[in-house]
Amino acid sequence: MSTTPGTTPPVVVVMGVAGTGKTTVGPLVAKALALPYAEGDDFHPAANVAKMSAGVPLDDADRGPWLDAIGEWAQRRAGLGGVVSSSALKRIYRDRLRAAAPGVVFLHLTGDRELIEERMAARKGHFMPAALLDSQFAVLQPLQDDEAGVAVDVTGTPEEIGARAVAALRALTD
Image (cartoon, rainbow, N blue to C red; front, side, top):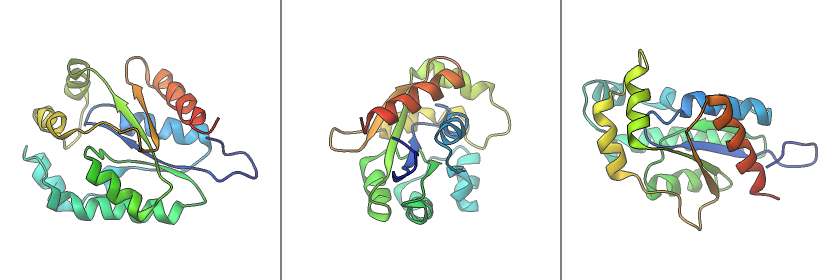
């Protein structure tokens, strides 16, 4: 994965359950690749934020407009590159993003449930309560062999995770 002259910069979707560090690692990856970053949570309609804030998991119908908005952003960045966060937990969600922007590459941040819950409990001011973590793990479908992307463990500091992520993304094209 290169952003050197003469190559097409990637559009990377940083995915994973809540608390894996998408909002922290995504900007680090974007900076390392010299690409703009978009926060996936910013694409949620107000009704989705209200629902999650109330501790109610989103359903597929709730996620549709959100995924479409992220897909539109990714499509506009095609050929220019960018990094955007999105839980993209199910294959059908990733298929929807790929339909909008066929060249997207997924960076799946993975980790132990205990570690992720601990990190969620420590964060302040986020609308997604730790109580919804079980629902996220229940619907998570990891990347499949035919999906362009890499999985990176979230153990370590954000900088360590970001460095591993960039190395894994670059290895996709080597």
